[in-house]
Image 1 (cartoon, one colour):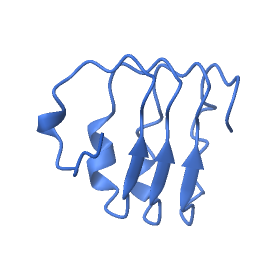
Image 2 (cartoon, one colour):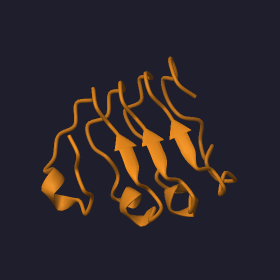
Image 3 (spheres, one colour):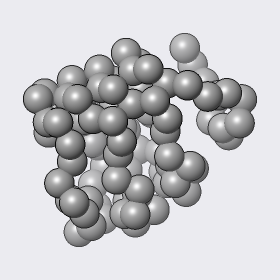
Image 4 (cartoon, rainbow, N blue to C red):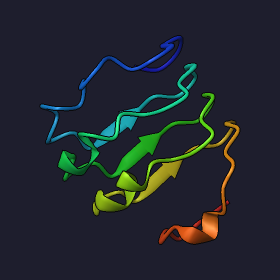
Length: 89
């Protein structure tokens, strides 16, 4: 789903419980869906770089299998010290 997606379809992650990698890079997203994130029990890699995100949802903390988040080239505005991730910038 990379490139030129202005917004995500409603509940597009709902039935993707076995998804391991999600690439949403190079779109114009200002948010990502939060309601279904905790159901992605196998998600380990999430690429969100090159969008228009200003925040990342707290629900990402509930995806325990997540090991990589690439959120570069966004307009993120918050204190990353509030997150329990090992930040490797």
